[in-house]
Image 1 (cartoon, rainbow, N blue to C red):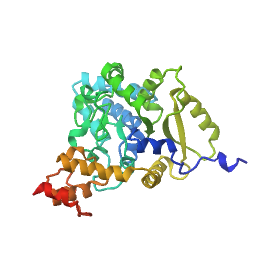
Image 2 (cartoon, rainbow, N blue to C red; image 1 turned 180 degrees about the vertical axis):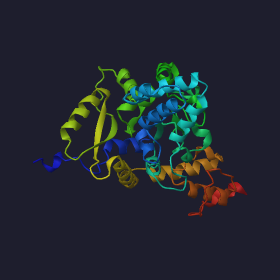
Image 3 (cartoon, one colour; image 1 turned 90 degrees about the vertical axis):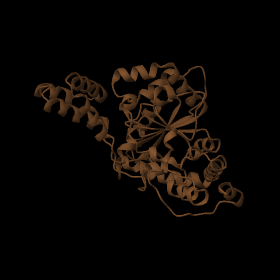
Image 4 (tube, helix red, strand yellow; image 1 turned 180 degrees about the horizontal axis):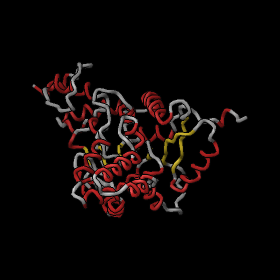
Length: 353
């Protein structure tokens, strides 16, 4: 019988290193497809299956070829093959329709979901997802997805970085194997990533074995001569007694200086991550400078009359109501409306007079 300390917890404790990183404004949160699947997007496996079916229905491949492609576990390879099949047969638009449907999600700006809790961690946010499920927390001018805009000299915590492109601009998307190779050998992009991993404590959320381009980059970039300890973190699900599997995973991530934070998936499966984020958000708000920093962000944006500096950390409806009611500033936050929950100080109200 295993001792209690050997049981994977349902809700892990927030590592003190993450609290320190938040207080120092040095936390970077890297978001993978596992998070967007929790709000209705489909994964690479289902997208690959859908694309294979499209190729078959269009008569591009026969049943035997369909069966062979469907049996592959390399989903990004399958997506690459299907893209070339559809593109070469005049069905390129069909491919992107499938992509758009896969990335639609099911949530709106007024519906609380895991992204609300993640955003309230108060970090620098980077995602390998191409969907727009997280975008409404950011001003549209602060959503970065074009390769030329990844600048290691101008990393901004009020921005959301879509490092594999955005579905809003199909030309920016990175989804085929050759495109991944091109992106990760681009010198400007590599400098951008190196700066983040050098200067920030990174928390990975929603990552599985199918999305390791970024981790491969980190592995390649690691200098074995530098002993800097385990400074980055990845939240991963396990069954409650998979202590041996956890140890194996940790031995793998040691080489990238990443500590595995396990949580239990016995009851809710991968959806347990929602519960972890909800609890972490509450704990972090209590013991970090998060709330005071959020208030300072609002104050600075109002002083400068620059709405793009607000990252909507305290909830879009609150920010919109305050700016509109007190300053008369037109704000487009996806149509959000709300009630004024607090009054601005006298010196700030004078700005609008």
